[in-house]
Length: 186
View 1 (cartoon, rainbow, N blue to C red):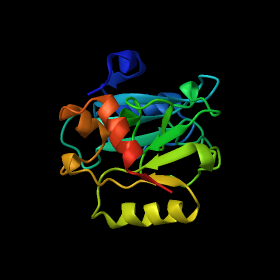
View 2: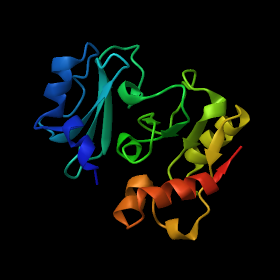
View 3: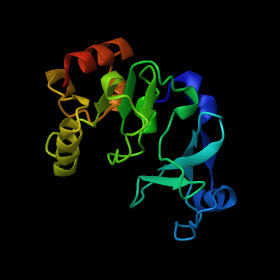
View 4: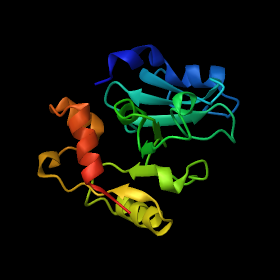
């Protein structure tokens, strides 16, 4: 589910590899050819393309593929609309970021470069996967760094992996933000 106001931010590529090779200086010749994907472009503060995430539209070994225009480009989605002086939500995936105010996405659970964020004005939100050892390890790491994090503990979320799932299952954006606020710990 993608909110209407973001529909002009995404597009379809019949051959994601071909598209990536046409815009990226990084060599992505190892990508699978002729694979159609939904393309979610990443822009910097100056609205310049810095990368993209391709979401598989059919059965694929890799559901999401993230590419960078330049090797040193950050894998951060939403920079063009981000207000660094306001409270920031940071989620794993771009689609989840469409639902929250002033939200960035790190294109996965890596979240390795948090240097652009103000710890006192940021809430890190990992997917709701309480048994995923990789997520738990990352959660521990960012807690040790002093970030506020969401620890999902609302029974309404059982079986719902991420914010998009929550919206698709009938929760409103206001309800999701309320749950996030109640499940945020520092």
